[in-house]
Image 1 (cartoon, each protein chain N blue to C red):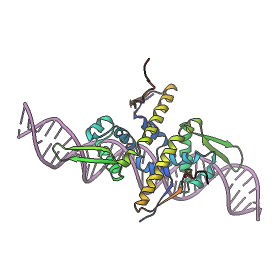
Image 2: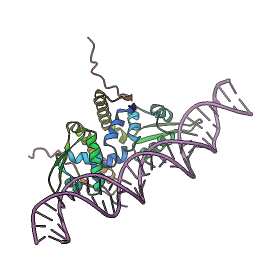
Image 3: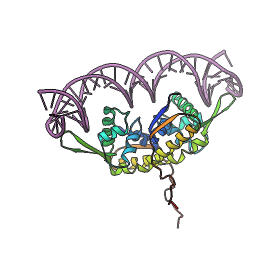
Image 4: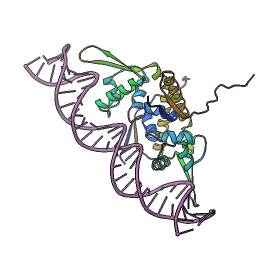
Length: 128
Length: 128
DNA sequence: TGCGTATCGCACTTTTTAGTGCGTTCTTGT
DNA sequence: ACAAGAACGCACTAAAAAGTGCGATACGCA
């Protein structure tokens, strides 16, 4: 019962979505259930081990739901839990800010590639 | 000119505010300029080295402004740059979510201490 | 039989991140 | 004269995070 101490709210959040992969995984899961292999293809640079490990941790934190279909070859699906869904807004913010930051840096001469751009309904409002 | 690649926007954001301390530091700076020592007192568990190091990185990323008053003993002030300010909304979200998460976990029996709770204007609306 | 599939575990190494301890600078207060 | 104060830098160590490589399963198919 080692009394846990946080300095400020954000610390608790980062403990859950921090690290190199968790936020990325969660962002992909925002749009719905995905299989392990799908996630791996969406995030080509993640290793199988990291993917599994991070998903397990997210599961332990009650953010991700893991559904195993008992068949061979294995079939496992991941989705956000209810608690996970409460992160959607935060994740959207984080994505959007990142995209803006990338745009700025590009405008500044940096060569950057962004694989998955959130289709922010680009004010493509009702055509004339 | 090694072409940088991000999987999704959030990755760029986390590169900047990720790590054990940056988001915490930024949250404290949300409320205005602070001196190095003030920050250290606000975050008692950070080491002097980490504080300086993280602030330097945030400065390099154009998020934090560092103002040195050329006097002895040294006097240095930190504040958010304009770009840093654009993170305010994101940081608020992260803080709030963390606080809610802490509340849930407490309700669940965990013993947690939160040092700095954002004074979310606790619906203490106009008194009668 | 031997191959491909989809998911994961495990042992091990490498890389990254964080922490420790000590030195520096002038000035003010005692 | 001496200690304390503020904000570092630097060399070094420790701990945490990520990456590599290999094995397992159990089925369907050529």
